[in-house]
Structure formats: C-alpha cells, structure tokens
Image (tube, rainbow, N blue to C red; front, side, top):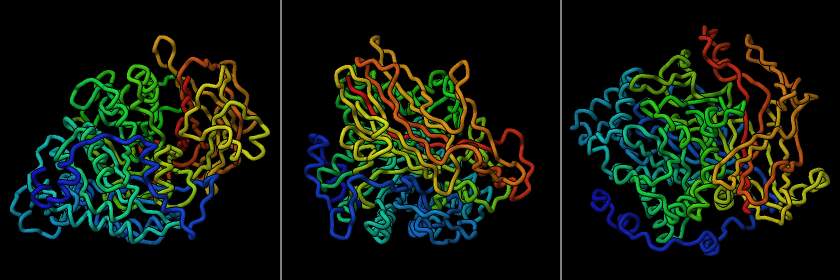
Length: 628
C-alpha cells in the first residue's frame, strides 16, 4: 500500500485506504445501475441470444508471458479476436477461423508493465542483478527465457521477488493503455470488450488461487483505480473488499472468476478462510456476491470433476492436471475434494444449511488462459499457452510447459480450451456482464455448441417442440437460476443442444445432479437424458459408446455418427422435495482429433503412446438450484 500512496495518493485513498463499509444487496445494486445498453442503436432481444467470448487472455505485458518472449500487445490481441490476421510472437501468420463476439485482456496485475521496462533496458531496472539477468534471457530467448520464467514463478510463489518489480509505478501506464485498448475496440452491438485484469495468488509456494477481475464499466470508472496486486495482499477477502470499495466509490460494478482449483493443492474450495479462521455467513455472502462464476476448462486442464471424487462418471478422466500445484509440489491426501467445481457445488449445499449462505454457488465459465495474446480453441489452429509452445516449435508436444520440483507438465498436456457462451439480450458490456452475474452462461472446451436449459415444474413435450424459450422464461428459470419448492411436484427440465455449425455431431446429453440428504451428507448422480443413434442401455443401465470415426493417419473424422441436435424434457426420477439439490447439463461431442494429432500428421512426428490424440469435447451449463 505504501507504494500506491507514494505514486497515486488519490487512487490509494479511493480504493485501498477506504473502509469496507456496508455491502449492498444485489437487488439494491441492480436498482441503482443505469442500463446504457438500451439505446436506439442496439437491438435487444428479451429471449436472448448466445454470444461467445474469452475471459482470460494474457499478452506480452504479463511478466511471465514477456519473459517467455511474448511481444503481442492488447491491441494485437483484440485485432486477432476480431478475425484479423496478425503476426504471432514467433513470426507466424495467425488468424482465427471464427471471430469472437466479446473479449477481454486479463494481464497479471503483479508486475504489469515491468517486462516492457526490462525490454527497454530501464536504468533503474538494470541496476538489480536478477532483473538484468531476466533482460538478457529475454533477448537470448529459447531455453534461457524459459528458465527465467520458471525462476520468476518460483520467486513469486516464495515471496522473493525484487522490490523493484513490485513497485506499482510501472503498472500505471500499462493499465492506462489496457483501458485505452478496450475502449478503442468496443463497438456496442457488434464487438464487446471488457476492462479486466488477473489477481494472481500463488499461496505458500505455488498453490493456485488466481482470480480474473472484470469490470462492467468504461474508462471513467476504471481509470479511478489501479489493479490490486498480491504484493499488497494474498487474502481473497481483501480482493472482495477492494471490489466493494470500487463499487461504492465509483458507482461501477465488478466481478471475479477463480480458476485452476485443480492446481491449488486443496486450497480453492477449502472450508475455512484464507487465514485459517472459520467460515462465517458474512464471508460466504461476500464470496457469492463477487464470484458468480468458476472456470471449468482452460489450457491447464479441467476443474469440473475428478474421477476419484466421481467414480461413476465415465467422462471425468478428461484433461487432468492433478499431480501438483504450479511448481508441481505434490498433493496431500484429501486435496482433490477442495479443488473441483462439482464437489464444491455439493459442499455448498451443506455449508448453506450450516451458515445460511452458500459460498460455492458458482456458475460455469471457460476460458483459454493463453499467454500469447492469441486466443485459440480450434484444435487444428492451436497456438499454445506460451510463445515457446506456438506451432513454430514442431516438437512442442515434448517441450516442458511447467517445470516443477520433481515433475514437469509437458506441452502435449495443454488443452486447446476453453470458451464461454453467454445468453444475453444484446452484445454490450452491460447486458453480457449482467448475464455473467446472473450465471446465464455455459462453459465449452472449444466447440460453439448451442445449449439451452430451463427448469420448472410443468414443462411438457409440447413446450419443447413449440415455443420453448418463451415457456422457459415464463414458467421456469434458465441456467443459473433458482427453483423454489412447489408442493411435492418434481422439477422438469427442458434441454436443447445443437452442434457447433462448423464442428462435430453430438454423442449425448447428461444431467448431473447433486443433493444433500437428511443426515447432511452430499451425493451425486449422472443421468444420460438423450443420446444419438439407436443405442440401448445395457444390463447395468449404461449407454454404449458412440463410436469413433477419427483417422489417426490423416487427422480427419466424419459426422457419420452422432446427431446434429438432441433435445428432451427430463423429470428427476429420484426427486425428494425435502432435499436441497442442483442440476446442470453436460453435452458431449463424438470423438474428434486433438491438437496433438494435427501436429503429428502435419509434421510427421513420432509421438509417444501416452499422448492423447483423440478426445470428446464438451460443454457444461451453470446449474439450476432447487430450494426446498
């Protein structure tokens, strides 16, 4: 805080020095906002359309990305997201096949702008030996830059960074330029940008507790603050207080999205506060208020579910990064329970009964976490996480991505994921941000599957095949909503899933249910609701596999199996009106080539047998919660 007071006294008083105050309720906050999206130029559809975007993008302005050789700027990243061709960090001509509807840059607040100064050879920076060494490594590139990046992560995790790089004065110009780029590329109704950053907590030697902070507002509000850093605090409560102070002093709004609990070593959803104190209702309410979504899929694996926690889920062993934290420090027994979204959703039901508030009432998000400025989820057009893992490196599959204490994550373990669909009345900051806040969102590993999910008590096949959307909103709630008890009636759910217009057919639609029994124990069950083809359940009730058309010699597949659309009305056959529950939809595609297979065929590589070449991509909705 002392640095902010020194360099930005007004901002420090506004954000860091102000007291927490009394939090507003969501309804009070919504009532006080002005819907600037409702302008004559913007067409708004009350039945909503889906808009696709990425909430997690780093450019060369993030220290770890810059140390790895990334040079692309926020301006480059926005141009790429719009579908323009840009030159990648390694000199390739890069272009998306399918542009985004909305986008944001989330460079790390820790050290934001520092790499730029190192590259420039800033005299004050070069006076510090370790920082000078980073500059030399960047210029050398390759393994030297990768080693410097690993050293940076280790030093940050252990609180050993030189004081010079923690000085927020370097952030000021970078933050201003980040805001300027977001404003320059924002075209309401056509392409939406958000002002954002990442707050990057690597607690106790690499336990991932990162959050992306996203503003609803424009430059007038965002320019009144500079991002919070972990040099000031690693306690998430302090981040939520920072966000609360921002809202109270500027009239704006902000939300945060946690990610990669799979690398938190049991810390992301631990049932205590960061400082070890007990959970309280106030703590639970603040977490729920400021963190409506959780990132399920990204380059560093999935955090939806783990096979050890969900042994009956035949699709849980997918893109697992479960061997340790960010520096590969091994997990302790029991850590998995506090790292995955589905388990947190279940725990939230129990905690709500104890505290009167649910801190883990998270909707579904997915994003890339690219550190190249190039957001790519297309398997045949994947640019990797870092510059050293761009396609220019023909052996990137066997190149270290993260180097740890006694283990490495290798390039082939990267997932070309993810992307989030948002059901919004218009393509504007206000409407898309509001949809995120109310959790009317779904996470995809990459395919732009069109997915709708409504819960009510009296939906029928006539609704499904007629004016489904009108019925869903009129007599029920969409994904992210709450269903309150209606006598002893069992909830009914309407689901429609349509394939990505440019992608693979669908295998099946599932509903994942979690509930709390009378003894306070949580449970889960997965229902195969509808599937493609004429497959029949076997004697154990299992739906047979859909098949596989992937050609391992050519990296091609056909849509001869699967369905272009699946839709159904589902009624819970095991419903108990007395039990708290949640339901979310998961849709799986037929098997398709993974990016590793495209690389193998493209470069005629001899890839080891343990490398996955085929997978089943998927999408998962925010839950609908049932409240007895």
